[in-house]
Amino acid sequence: MHPENHFVIIYTLPTGASHFAEIAGRCAFRFGPFGTKATSLQMASVLFPQLRVIDLSVQGHELDEVELLILANAQFMSELSAAA
Image (tube, rainbow, N blue to C red):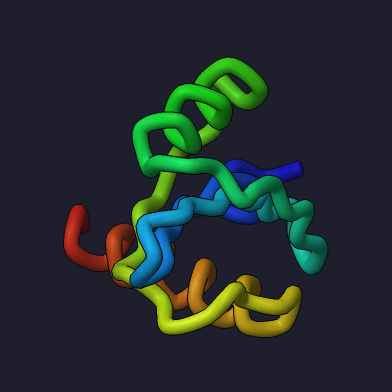
């Protein structure tokens, strides 16, 4: 799988709960909720040490798979464009 198709996203909710998801092509594998963003970051770095981690802004609700894929890929492309 190409690196641009495989990464991890992390997002928090207004309650402070945090989620992360592995994005692999057109699939999203969700983890959480966790009590804090720090816990999500730690779990993601242990489970996926080789993958890029992208931090989404606070979300108003738990994201479904389609929302995860759209927001994650948009943020990933935005970060790639900014780095170029």
